[in-house]
Image 1 (cartoon, rainbow, N blue to C red):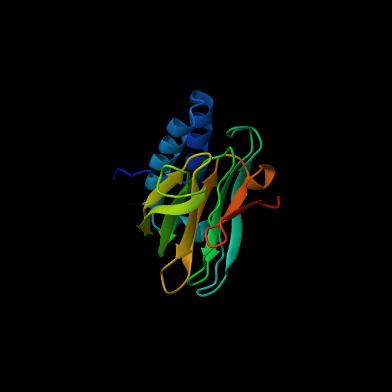
Image 2 (cartoon, helix red, strand yellow):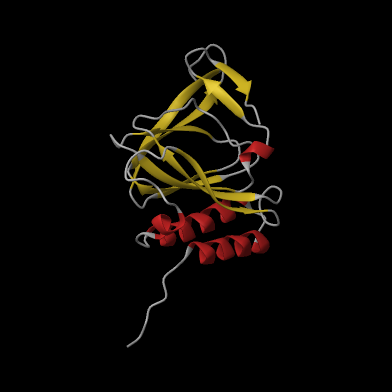
Amino acid sequence: MTQTATYTMEAFVDDVKEIFASTKDPLAQAQAVADHMQVLLDVPDWLEEKLNLPEEGGFGRYDLHFDEDSGSPEPGFLLMCTVQKPDQDNLPHDHGAAWVVYGVYDGAIEQTKWRWFYKGEGVDSPRIKETGRFVQKNGKVAFFLPGEIHHTRNITGGRALVVRLESQKLTELTRYQYDPNANTVKKMDR
């Protein structure tokens, strides 16, 4: 009987390290990591093997792997899972010089994209405005490149489990949060 090897989180981490070693292009890196994360998300129950989550609740962030030697723009990529509360939302933000891949393990999140509009683009003064939104359901992957502005919202009705790979640990980078209602921007705390 032939046994089929299952893609593991450890194999995913090794693939991510290889991606960082083989290219410095953020778009190529993010796309390749997203492709591999798609394979990982197709493996049943791998996250339950890594985390001892209760049947309900367990909200918060769980670090799965931190790598001090690989990453972009500097070493220090982070693989994590966030367990999001129903309707959990945040203000639009960027990821500074890093890119981030989001994979929905269980549930659904809505991703909303934003950008600044300037005089001549239908506004009288600089204004942050929504440019689109999409829903990520179970097993779907999306990524955001350096400088892109977005926010996520759990639309599951229950908790959502989202696997996220930060090309560099975001707490090490300068990032910004945007308030579209007040049309303001502020530096995020590290």
